[in-house]
Image 1 (cartoon, rainbow, N blue to C red):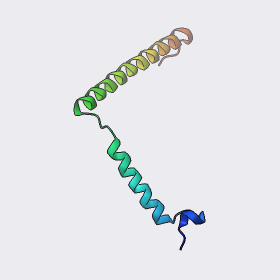
Image 2 (tube, helix red, strand yellow):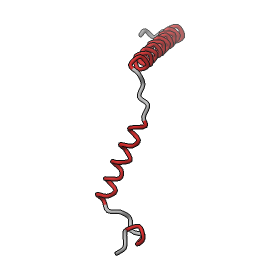
Image 3 (cartoon, one colour):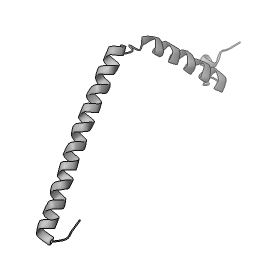
Image 4 (spheres, rainbow, N blue to C red):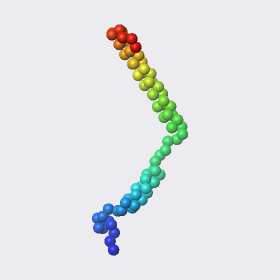
Length: 76
């Protein structure tokens, strides 16, 4: 009696799904999850950078509107 490996056949669908799930579980055990403090710190950093970016985009937009009004005399 021969196995799939010796015949060169690829495993069936359910065998591939089962192996994929086993591999996924193994990888999830190796994941290093961040601590609550790290998550909070990273969230605050992202919020701060988003606020800075919003202020810069708003300032740039205001300057462009002012320049358009100054150069073309077109009201906003």
